Amino acid sequence: MTAQEAYQWLLQHSRESAYLESFARLAAWDQATYTPRKGHPHRAQMQAALAKLLHQRATDPRIGERLAILEGSSWLQPGSVEAVNVREWRRAFERATRIPERLAVELAQATSEGEAIWEEARPKNDWEGFRPILKRIFALTRELADVLGYKEEPYDALLDQYEPGATTAQLEPIFKQVGEASVALLRRIQGSRRRPDTAILRRHFPIPAQEAFGKEVIARLGFDLEAGRLDVVAHPFMQGIGPGDVRLTTRYYPDYFNAGFFSIVHEMGHGLYGQGLLPEHFGTPMGSEISLGVHESQSRTWENLVGRSLGFWRYFWPRVQHHFEALRDVRLEDFYFAINAVEPSLIRVEADEVTYNLHILIRFEVERALLRGELDLEDAPEAWEAKYQQYLGVRPPQIGDGLMQDVHWAAGLIGYFPTYTLGNLYAAQFFARAERELGPLEEQFARGEFSLLLEWTRRNIHHQGSRYWPRELLWQVTGEDLNPTHLLTYLERKFSALYGV
Figure 1 (spheres, rainbow, N blue to C red):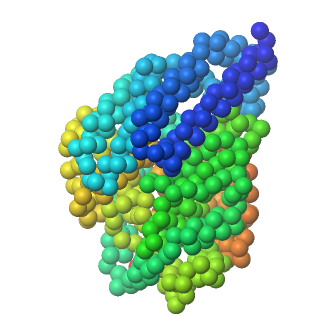
Figure 2: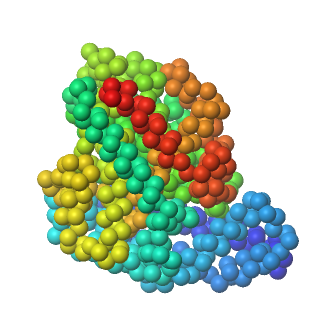
Figure 3: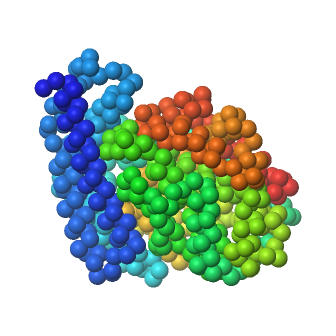
């Protein structure tokens, strides 16, 4: 077999697997949106069967044989699309072959069950009903870390699944710097006499109007609604099914503006990344997102750096007042201050920009302690509460607002949370570079011009697929390694001006 023939076989095999993965994503989206309650057990079996089939395909010995042919061939040109695909296929093959089929199937089934149980248990604060499946998921995930292997600690094996090349040792000093700066800025804000009137966000906002305005905004920002849709779920997410099919979800509260609107814009940022991947590379690493941290950088860019900017609302203010009678007596400046209010809170997805990373730091520390064996799952709720008291000065009155608020652990996404803070860091660094090249972006937003930023991110990030690992992508785009100063400078400038500190 020639190198070119080996590559064509791998290309076809990879694309066929990608279509099966699309079915798995579609089933996961349907489970979170429309599956009837009594259908969840069957859905778990469906996901387990798909996981088994995908694992068998991912560990097919012929993959290794053909990769060996290519890796020893002069046909493979360094830096080419083919070379990127082969590099990432090798990485995926080595990881997959370390995972026993039994473990892959058990994880798929346990996490499908876990999400369904969590969805029912959280509103009831039913920790005892949720704990057994969560204990099983953590046990299986620890087993996964052991089979994947790690140099220093099990957390690294899980983190590497979501953020290639990242380690706990790399993240700890960066997270510490961000955490300390966030706490210091929070303390200064808490000492300010300026206070926004957040009651204006707690007026009546009819859900149909929220949906209509949300769709109007994301279409104006560049999301193609003919290649996507928006649905309602218990915990917002984006699911990319494939080219031409990127699905967003949100949750609405008729008496709270922020929750629905900003989750729509957040998930739209993820969706723009999904729609920006080059369709001709579908089913290959060059047509795939490189990491969840980079993915999160896109959602945080549009949610915060764009969607919470004054320029953005200067443009959309007439439209939001058209949709919502409750805002027609409100000044733009008061609304802008309200949506950027800083207040320690219990719920991560509703946290402000200053305190958000403290929520991630708490989860990072709890996850590591659980995986290291320093903390028993039975004691995790108490540890969680203590850390919220330590970092944010608040304590959850019920577990549904504490350890059980996120779906991630039920979904088996352990080692995932650090990508949220990495996303904030990447977003600020990318945005600073974009502004150097494109000029003052907020002035463009005030004129309703969002296409230049979207085109810049498409060219520099989306179209790159998995060509570069995250830190290398940062170098290629910004000319420097990960630099927390960009995020901390942005937060300091914005919130010291708002609060006069």
